[in-house]
Length: 635
Image 1 (spheres, rainbow, N blue to C red):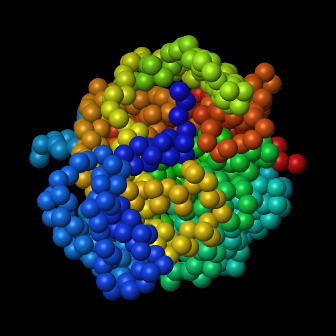
Image 2: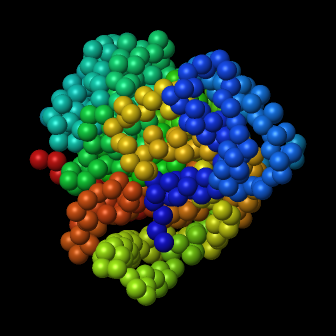
């Protein structure tokens, strides 16, 4: 079965209901039984033995004796009082829990990185990266640079062959021109951008060149706080929300001289591509969404409307829009980039990362934004810094691949008719079977691009080593995300403000937040213990190999987000005219439905804080294939 993020999360949340938080269930049953009479909130509700029996059935525990139930009643009332006391604190989203997730397994005190690689080492050639042209010239029309990468733009700015002001005005004009079609902008930061661009030009003219991002326009996913502008989180009810301080990543890009031109869309509270103003579109097929939740960054970079963008990922939110929109996304090791000033969805899974037009661009941006800030409890004491040293020699890297993910697909199992099946049941079964057959056809078609990638790697001289993803219940662990998200937005659920969110379906946040309240604390801890096993076993793989090649979808996406390993998502070609036609309705869950002329992707994984190896190898593949140079036709 092909997995999708939203459907998979929903299934896991439903599985979590099998053992809900027992006191919470009882408290809810008790208050509901006494409404509307229960109006005195200063007094605890009455809990009856019958309610304990009902809650026990939901929780999958019991039966209890009469004496046991009475003892539980005496203690549960006190527990519910504690719950209410904590709720009264009204903690904002920015308050982190008193624990922090760090993705490294336990290692000996004197342990070194595999093969003595330094995770901070990376190339810094005069032009900002390999393959640059010191004799590069500026076009007559600045809009010809719309799809240029950061290396090229940086060279032109540094040598004063173009100005930041001209670039900024060009990108602002394109954002305005294509937003009605693609819906990727929430707020233009035009006044701020023009001031920054003028300052950048003055500094460069005075010989104060800050580095390869100086003067380059960029876009921020609108979960990053920017002082003086709304930070909406893409959600109804938050349209006018503001913060008094810029996010750390915004501050660091300001320091690097980059020019913020827009706050870009995200699906409401970082789910999907639907936000309070509509749905962000895929530049390759505007009839479909861009996927999400880094919807605007993926769409705007793809459409040549910003030099680069910053997205975020908790469970695929950089990977998925990078795949659909055909851009290069880097999801760093968990903790490498501080998240201060960014909306929290899951404190142990959220990651910020660059979305660009080349692998080298992602490295340039990562160099500017990585490293601890003294505020994010999970930020690691590690920076990814550009130094004047040679690239790691990718020829010497050990390259693995998840063999079973490239093997022929197993036979498709369709639902058989059941005895006594009604006409309505038959119709629904046939519809499900047709859906499965269409999904299989799309997956089978895309598999040829993945196989071609292995062939290309072998032609490059790579000796591919077969490995397999550890067999753990990764999906069950992902219920951790739902529990943390429900805590992050507890106030929405308790006050009923979740009704303001645009999407209200079974798989959307309002229902997911309510459902997650039944996830028991004991099982949350057990899932985290299972996650520790996952970190250990995934890390052991990277003692065998340096890089793992994998399709961008399915279980590895869930696993590596849980273990905090870095990933680079690269464009890997365009589907041909013979590609299966896309479904009439884009449910936002699948990245393989684009149809003819839309991008496919490939993902490279590496060990924790081994972004240097990841960038070196992925850059070599990208240079050998050139798929990142393909751009959508917008007019």
